Image 1 (cartoon, helix red, strand yellow):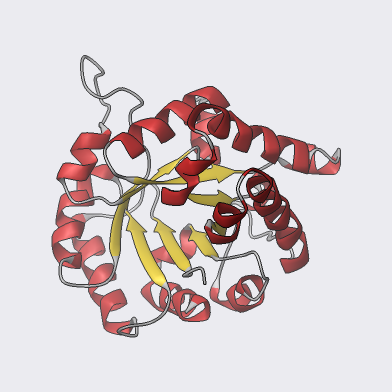
Image 2 (cartoon, rainbow, N blue to C red):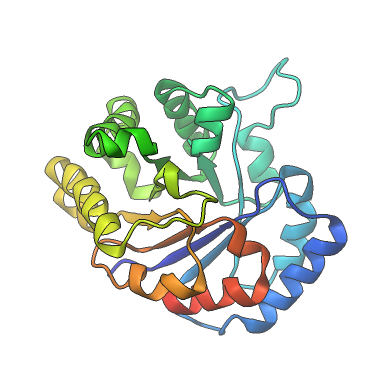
Length: 250
């Protein structure tokens, strides 16, 4: 059985004091030994301190992005080895904001995926379509293309140590959310694509939903058979709200 995962992507929010309060409150509320796994992804400058605060808990630490290169003259970048060194076990790759705002192509995302796995990090591979693409009925082709860009480089076996996150771009930070049925349709397609290459991996790979996940809709989303948790943005900055989402997954 797939273990649910709820990942909090703090994006470019927080401060040392705010983060400490958030993590303390969250750890107080999370049920010990709950079935689901919890992951926090703070900004890179706060990874070390957040990791220290999470030490001894069941909450994993992840980064929001990673450099595609192992080391060298890449000012401002952070390598997979560096992320591993400060305690990360996961890293988000291909988030729609990285694709849209920073011009990361499918091929570049695939390189980041490979870089992460080369250091033993578990990539959370984000895929998803824009509103224009959904309205023109391109959802399945866009998501399939983004997934295939990675699989064509790594092979399906790489998904044994990876997570996929479907995040419709039109639902990120907008308050709009794909209905459970809409999300399930895309999740089922992703799982089917993977299963066509390897049935065992298709059954075991965790596929998260991301796109305005909140306490009020998490239970219905996570009840879908192919939705294994959530990639949570704004709601992860509120300990009460995020704990409720985690409880819905567990």
